[in-house]
Length: 318
Length: 280
Image 1: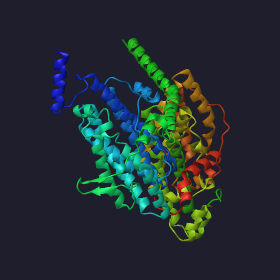
Image 2: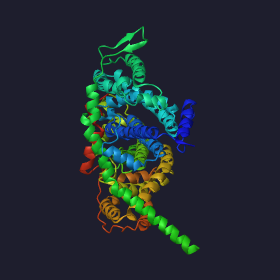
Image 3: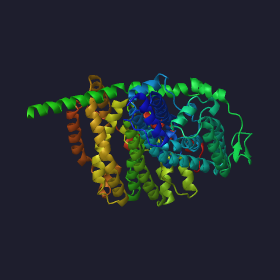
Image 4: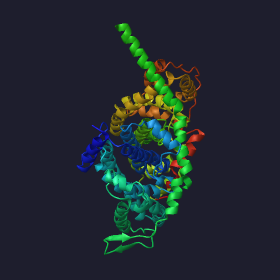
């Protein structure tokens, strides 16, 4: 086949909703886009372990501690599936880590915000995982097979995380005055960054059109953002918390909530590295990697010694 | 109070707390790795181990709380110095697993000193786990025969988890010992350092003696030989040298701790202390 017919074959698969698999021909840009998106997603999972890991040793009850540990462990597992999915595109995990550590690869900016109180464990689960689910459920049908299959597993666990986050918020909102204050304070700090998680407006999103065409993306950033707001505002009402947006108003005609202007300066600033915790998050990842170098070397050296001994034995036996 | 013989039901409570405190404190230390491990798969494995320890601690604290709640108030008052717990007793309230974990100060914690030693690096963490897991494996195996049905059931369930912990930490001892020169030097140093906390695991306190006599506890002197053999076997395969120092630290099981425990508790108990008497 010529490149032209490879391209036609690929396009036909996309149009007919046939999944693209690792051995299939794919355009270079499709591969690049997927590597960028999947590795960014994987990095978000492991960087995302940090703000929540921050409260494991301080969780207010043993039950909450156990649930939080299990949740952060799940995030690590998601990172693992996603790194594996990206590896099917011809990049190694070490290369992806290197891109993260050198700042070449991004991760979700939301994790550059600090987790300051216990209520943040509720807000992150409810809002951040809630927004992630909105983004991720359509990805279960994304055109690249390994990514879609990884996302099916991820989404099952994320919806559990979202529920447990909401339950933490609900417990606080039904609690004492200071607990209510803690919950409201967390909502105030996490609301706008969560809204920004869907990325820039469609007009300013450079990758959206092509990704939609390739059926990597199924909905635009603005469509998903609106859906998230519509659902979450109702949930906030249910537990008596106030969404920190004075312009928030139900629009009968549109059948959606209207909302106030998003501070995109803040968004781009955090993306560029000026968020409250960008430095800490990246340093924590780099430190874990660098301090772990001798451990990985030892594991490798030991595995090689074992292999050599086994081969030696087999030679002798033969 | 801690060294004096107490009645049978109180002793059973203290014995249960000793096991629970080991699980909670070691689990806490291990959980500090979460998100910071050298290899993603190992980060996940360690978090899983932390969860196992925490699960064991919870079952044991619930059992301890039930025993505590069944005691007459006069006796309850003699057990823990914490003002918050004393207030609950005065009000006639029952306590639960969280009260035992979050409202006792260090002088009422009974874990072995080994459990509270810091993670330092991967070598120290692996060594601490290996020395403890080996003990824990034989301990839970024997505790399955406890006359206390809850302890026996916890032991049976935990033994499955601890079997995995021991396999994990033994494999890492071998990998690090028989890995690179650097890893060998690091793990030997860690072993030489934390070795001094192993004697206490086999020290028979009044609580241990009484529990054994009552048929609920484990004869820890009897498992020492098994522990020693297992440790020797793994160290040999790991090409490591058995430490020769025989001087041992002790005190944790009798509520005299290292400076580390205070900081662990300050962090762990922060929420309950700053925002008391709330549901979370």
